[in-house]
Amino acid sequence: MADVTAIDIEIRELTEQQTAVVRHRIAMSEVGSIPGWLGQTYEAIERAGAQPSGMPFVRTLAIDAGGMEVEVGWPVATPVAEDGDVHASTLPGGPAAVATYFGPYDGIAPAYESVQRWCQDHGRVASGAPWESYFTDPNEEPDSSKWRTDIHFPLAPVS
Image (cartoon, rainbow, N blue to C red; front, top):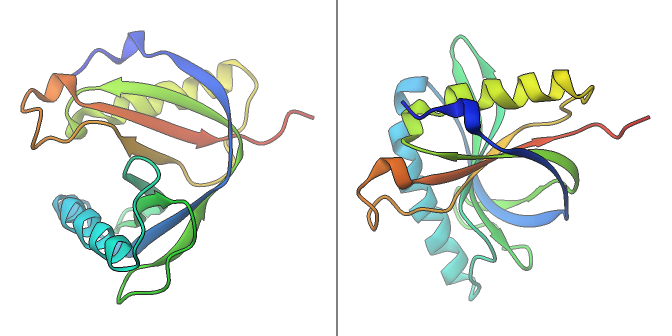
């Protein structure tokens, strides 16, 4: 597991992004389906004559003992028309606590805990569903310790 004690966390002002996504309710054991859904979404974007405008992501909309509801997709410059299971959505703009994690996907949970602890320590409140952006293609980089994932936690405005 990666050493998450050295994770840098910073506040970034994000711009709202249009996205093309598939939404699924999954059991934790089904996380392995995500790469296929990214491919499905990418193909729908191409059929629309567009290209992704950023890195692929997974946004966790809800999580409970039975599993989680996720949006899996790509940012796009303009909304993409519905194509089967693929539909338009957005990633929110505004302040976000963003952590960069290097390591295998199955070791990312402590990085989430670090962001939550950082928010508490700095008097910030997460508001909205967090998401992960993937900067490394595991098919191109076999060393999972080099896989980069940015974790975004939208923040409530400071009052």
